Length: 321
Ligand code: AMP
Ligand code: MG
Image (cartoon, rainbow, N blue to C red; front, side, top):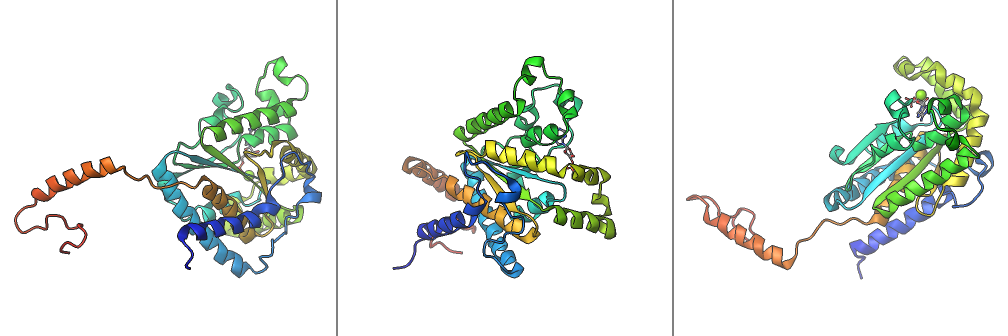
């Protein structure tokens, strides 16, 4: 017997689940980035050619599901992208989202906070850019900067002008808990959170900085600040490891995406996002029998208004073309 589309979808979802499993951070596991995740891992996809072909399929899957997500208007999807400088966030967004309807996606890049943003609680600026139901929101950097750059450079915390009580004890543990609670609240209310960390090696970062220096078309992307941040490589590795250990949850697990090969990172990111959409399983809305009868009455009325010589209903099944 032939396989039904539903069965095919099921097989595809299971294959994706197996493919992305090695990237998923088990909730509660203690992560040491350097020991636990290899930035050059290829999950059995050894040829770039194959990776590029699979990515094209992934882009198509995303487009199909996004159309249904938008039509259903019940769930939203928030994609959180974190990486070190030159980790490939921009290119990943450009490629992975290339097939979806631009009306259904909103990308937000978070920079150094403005005075207005600093005058609010630290999750405020992220909350104001969450996706609506039916939308895919992409955070290029995210609320996780609040436990990454803010942790590595504590002067950022001073700028937040917190009351003494909010700095007492272990502020980072408290922020992990607050972020977990916030994401749980979002998930419970139909806003699914998918978190991707693009994991780059120090040597590949050096190479990518050199490319920005050597190729004129890439010069604009080079920033001395990025090279200075590289001196804090160890501190960032610790901050990322802590973040992964404390904020990978059942409702919003982290995926550590091997990022030394751009084509692989894009493929893996599209797989994780596609899998989340398959789990949401959005459907085009259907009409009730009662509504269908109402529509039939309106259709009759419109066909009766046809001028002489015009087809009463050019779309009527078995009617004249
Ligand atoms: P880019 O992504 O290269 O445009 O750089 C944005 C910069 O904003 C990076 O250096 C981030 O570390 C910084 N940034 C983002 N969010 C925050 C934050 N909450 N506090 C301080 N700096 C931030
Ligand atoms: Mg930068």
